[in-house]
Amino acid sequence: MAIIIKTPEEIEKMRVSGRLTMEVLNMITSYVQPGITTTELDGICHDYIIKVQKAFPSPLNYKGYPKSICTSVNHQVCHGIPSNKILKNGDIVNIDVTVMKDGYHGDSSRMFIVGKPSILAKRLVEIAYECLWAGIAQVKPGAFLGDVGYAIQRHAETRNCSVVRDYCGHGIGRDFHEDPQVLHYGKLHTGELLQPGMTFTIEPMINAGRHEVKLLPDGWTVVTKDHKLSAQWEHTVTITEDGVEVLTLSENEVIPLLI
Ligand code: MF3
Ligand code: CO
Ligand code: CO
Picture 1 (cartoon, rainbow, N blue to C red):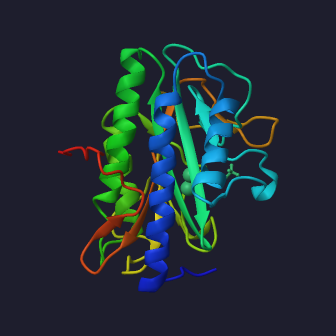
Picture 2 (cartoon, rainbow, N blue to C red):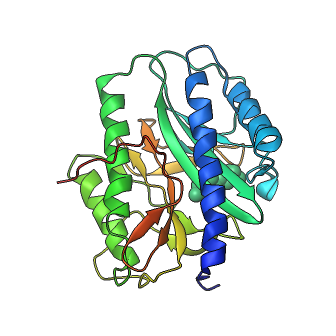
């Protein structure tokens, strides 16, 4: 497979699906409280996407995935399946939303801290968010995909966190997952040369302990091998003539200052 460069008309459609994805995450925020189950969060997002947005939750039935969003709690790294598990004070949860509208997908995830966080959990969630933006900051025509991975890895590892190797970001458009693979580690000046019209996700999974992960018997849920906490944030971006446009950006999002 090759990287599909999008036309301006396609980018406009991806702006719409990106905005809808962002709006689902904004909508669900106030529901993420101690006592709610992840299945309830899934149901609220599902109904909103179908009934209000008149769009489709891309994960539902994707390769047999049974729900409309992914909810990954504490040491779950990604692809957690919503269940009757009740969120409790101090949990951290990633909610990953993908919306398809008019044939194009938008994909974004955020961390939510349930009730009062531990200092360690808060620090990990913040570092993972900075890692996302350290990656986004590299995106412009003429840069390399390896520059994105390098910036993320450096930010994480200089803060004693590790980067998950076994899962990555991805091209996105008419397909949920397209080329290229967007690694969240790497070397400067390696990998694909970035060009205007490319659309992909950046979605670093950052662990408090070691980077190794394992897949649970449900076939979806990925957890840290050492059972330490993991955090992830995701945006869908497109490369413009002179930089980057974040298609899933929220109007009230605070972009971190990176040193
Ligand atoms: N949204 C995830 C991603 O960022 C993929 C979820 S696939 C699913 O790529 F089937 F688990 F939903
Ligand atoms: Co993604
Ligand atoms: Co996602």
